[in-house]
Image 1 (cartoon, rainbow, N blue to C red):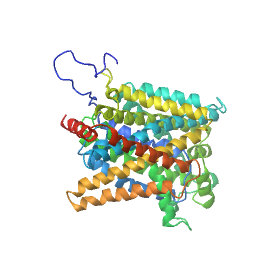
Image 2 (cartoon, rainbow, N blue to C red):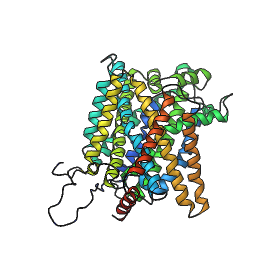
Image 3 (cartoon, helix red, strand yellow):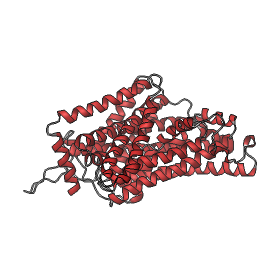
Image 4 (tube, rainbow, N blue to C red):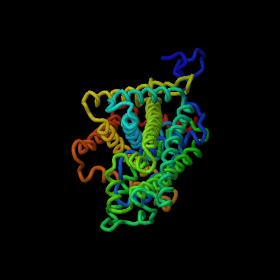
Length: 476
């Protein structure tokens, strides 16, 4: 191990201190992780949505707010690099805590490769739009994203979060330029097809009932995935029990305003009529299509680059979360102790980061060897990660309900609602049974969770290790 590594044995007679992360992040740097992993620009760039989309996103934002409530309350009491591992472990016990952390780790082992594929997909779109390269292979672009993310993540958590914030600010600003152009032309009456601003976008179209609205809101809910990521900075934020709850609230509030505004303008841009709704829902790149229609090809190319930056930011945030979870497991003796190594030079848990990046590289290479298309890789891994994330949302809100309900029954309401909402979204991601190969992904996630449960049984002294580890961090 590196001579500068904090795991090196001291030469004095003093007891060895457990490896420690650096407490150095301010509020904006903490919030950047939650916003960056949500990747609002990438979320708005991927595909079209169903009818009544603005209303669906408004309903989704309300649901996410209720799910986030449990995270906010628990993050205000527990600060730990393992985030939900400590939230649930300190409330429901060692085994549920480990399973929540294991589910979160399952998500963030695959989410960074999803982001790398986002770079590849929109990088190819940029090269096609500009005519620089036609039909570029996705693998070299994904490898370039992998290398950039690895280099930035290894520099230290402060430069990493600042890079993440810069990427998302630039990409969001590009979308705001498009939104302003659409609104200007709608107001001036020069929009293509003669569309005009209309409040009809917030009204359910004929034939669209509340059940259809609820299903559309499920898709909107998933655009907020990652809002909880700031919780992994519990040992690196300066005032974690104040900053992390505020960071989660900020991410959800920003997402709610941005998503509803962006979807509303896109709906108006395509047209609120049946033809416009159909065009929007079938568009594979709605922002690019609108940019070409309202402004021109150069803005469409710039938006592709914006999506690339957003995907890079999401990848950076994802490796931060995964590396901190592996670090926490290693420190408590639930995984190889080497994973708890921290670089004295950068404060980064380098062994855990290296394992995370190696897994990402293996996944990308395996799909390339299998000849899988870029979009399929993106959606396959995103689906797997989302299912595991939803399980974690349910567990964390059960923990919040148990913890808060012991104080007063009134405090039960929001986390119980969070359990029901996250459970509803999870249910509608597995039923009706999706087509192959998506029908097999729930079983893959179930297998991952069962493997985690087996570990809680076979690891010697498991409960004591978890309890000692959580108490040590709480006291330290």
